[in-house]
Image (cartoon, rainbow, N blue to C red; front, top):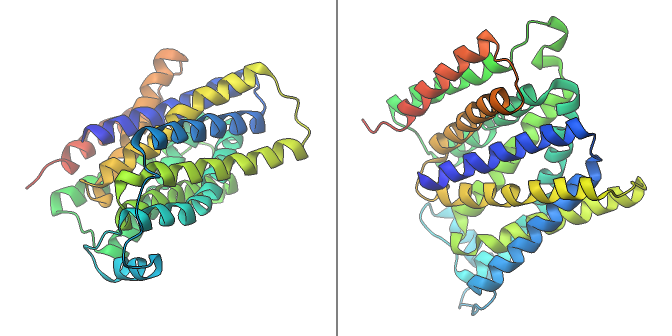
Length: 305
């Protein structure tokens, strides 16, 4: 459970830093590029420290091990194949990471940090549903009740009194929902089939791929690089890396259908509270109701009955 708490704290830090970057008018591609630069450099240090590059190829090929992994519920690939899987899956996940960050920053400007942050976490429904369908990770009845309460809480937080801001017709928020969900699902896929001891290789490929894409956009847009924007990007990069790191660790011991809702609800709770204290934001009545529901849901989803 401690890894899930750390993932929640890191995820919340990203949202709050994005709000700060929006306030100071930071350049979007400079922030993303700097963010992914520090993230993949940190992952390199972690790989070297753990010597995750020093592995021996086994008797089975990667294709053979991967085929066995997807056909068997309990089979985990060897260190060699886990590294190969990270090298292959990482760039795909990197596209989702980059895209979700771009839509997140754009949405903060249009919809505000609270709406963007909570709707991003609503994307948790994507890996939840896929995990139940693909791997039969069925929660207990009491945990299912907690998941239902979480969904209600997230919907309440995202509802607006302005009919022109209905979430069902907001394209940027719908994109944020899908991309955010695919980011979380990519973490789950690696945890499901590969050894988590080699997750740093996967994360390196995620962030180096996202960095290359960000750099391409930065060059194409001829964005003027300012030290302030680079500093913000570096500040975002560390929690960005460790959100995925700790979430993968948490998924090794907690069902995805439980871990993802707690991760989502906990992040929303912290963003709302920190926004009120740090940025002096007023908590709307509907958000107060949602906070109570979130706390209730977290208690339910951690009950083993």
